[in-house]
Length: 54
Length: 281
Image (cartoon, rainbow over all chains, first blue to last red; front, side, top):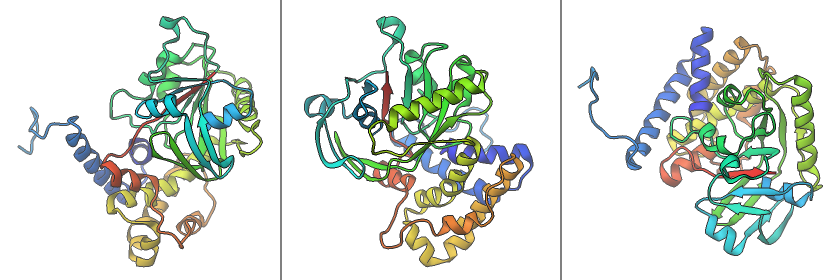
C-alpha cells in the first residue's frame, strides 16, 4: 500500500494539495501493515529510543 | 498467466521463479482455468522453473531480454523489488517490465539501471492461485504497456521495446495488450479506484456492493478520496476525465459481493500483499 496510497499522499504534500481523507486511509492501512509485521516477527511492539509517546 | 501467454505465443522462453508453489509447479505443472485460453489446461510448465532469482553473472547464463515483475510492490519490507530482480538484470540489455500498480515504482529501478528500459504494465486481469499450482483466471488479460517517463534511455528505444514486448505477448492470439501512450495518466486513473474502494475494502473488510448500498461509505470515504486523487493528479499535470469519480463508483458488478485485491489480502493473512515472481528470456 506504500506505492498505492503512500506515494500519492507524499505527492499531495509536495504539491500542496489537501488530502485529509487519503491521509486517514493511509494511516489506517499503515496500522494494518504494522499488525501484520508484528504477527510475522518483522516488528517488535516496544518503545524505541526517542519515542515521545513512552 | 503472463508466463502462459508468453510461452503459448511460441516466441518467448520463460524462466519462472516460483516459491511457495515451486513443488506443485515442478511436479504437476500448472492447472489453469482461463477465460482467455481455455478452462481445462493441465500440466503447464514454463521452459524453466526455479525457486530463486537467477544470478546472471554468478551462474554465467545468457542475459535475459526481459524481466517481468508480477509481485505486489511492498517497498517497506526487505527485500524490495530492486533487491529481488538485481541479479537477473544485465545493464544496458535487459528490459524490466513492472506489471504492478502504484506510483513512483520505477524510480529505484531507473536510478540503479539507467541504461535499461523500464516498462509500465497496468493490468485489468483477474487471476488467482486458489491452491498451489492451481490458477483461476476469470477476467480478460488486457494490459496497457508503455515506457515510464523520466528515463535516460532514448524515448524511441523505450517505445520500440514496449511494442516488441506487446507483440511477443499477444502472439498467443487470445490476449489484448495495448500500447500505453501516457503511462502517468493510466497509473493515476488506476489510483482513483485503488486508493478508495480497494483501500477501504481492506480496512472495513467489506465488498464494494455493500459500500454502495450503504450510501454513506461512498459519500464519506470513497468519493472524497477519489476527488483528492483527481486533484493531486491535476497538480501533477495529469487531467483525468470529468466525472471519472461517478464512473468508477459504479464500475464494479453489483450482482456479486466484489472484494478488491487488498480486501482479499487482508482477509487471507492480514498482510497487505503476497508475492510471486516471473521472469522471461
